[in-house]
Length: 52
Image (tube, rainbow, N blue to C red; front, side, top):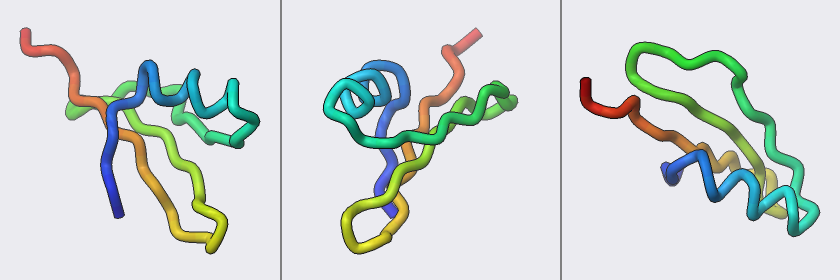
């Protein structure tokens, strides 16, 4: 599985017509979203929370 940042990537993918399932909840370690490549392999977008 590949991990990418969530914010800009999710918007770009949706603009390109790709379905992205975002988790609306922010967890202590960050946020995530998931999409699938044409072969059905999951790709997870993940973004850590900013340092406090």
